[in-house]
Image (cartoon, rainbow, N blue to C red; front, side):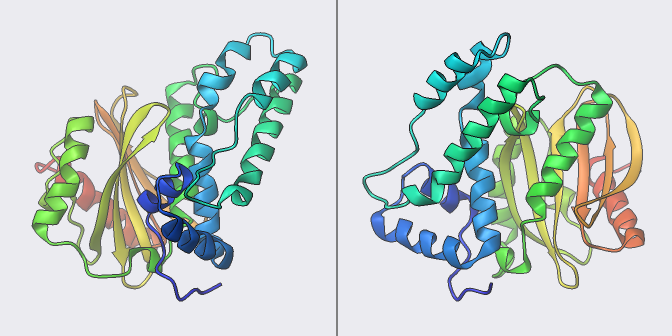
Length: 269
């Protein structure tokens, strides 16, 4: 559903989840969530990602008796704020925790992308998994998510700076520039306890796309192509990092952009 309100950023939604907004700001976001399905889905995604599953459930994984799980579940309060009347929106978070506890009792494997725990996957499976998580996240973006002018070079450099420190890469505006698409935002996320850099772009014809980077010791891998959530993905890795470029751009152009992205980090290509 289209809404006349400005779509809140991930930072705004995270502050809403953490109860850090004023009552007026919280009410505005609550209204948008009720009216805009994509914002509601993104809020739910961020809410799940912020829950302390690892700390809450790690001691129970070896045996997972129902009584202890139910006691632990009851001890986790729903996130509330005296500044915000947002509690009804997070009833589903309690339901999600209940489903998690039931799954642990039944011995069902829970996706590490959601709870950050479980047996160590092989390098191949782990690399595939992080791309799946990113695809789920990027699929929630719309052109309206990145409405407004593209930031200037100085602003781009300021946004890329914290990513450099966490990932050990030289992420200059020139290195991440892609032809025909606008740089819109760079932000630091987290996957499986590791920093994940996301550089978001807007293609005027097909909408949002993103270049995402994580540290990886899986070794060098030549570019490959796959499809996730109706989007095309070009992915590759070098000795220290794994990369993926994802968007709804046609395959041939996505391959070209993938080569441009690789060249930004390996100018001799």
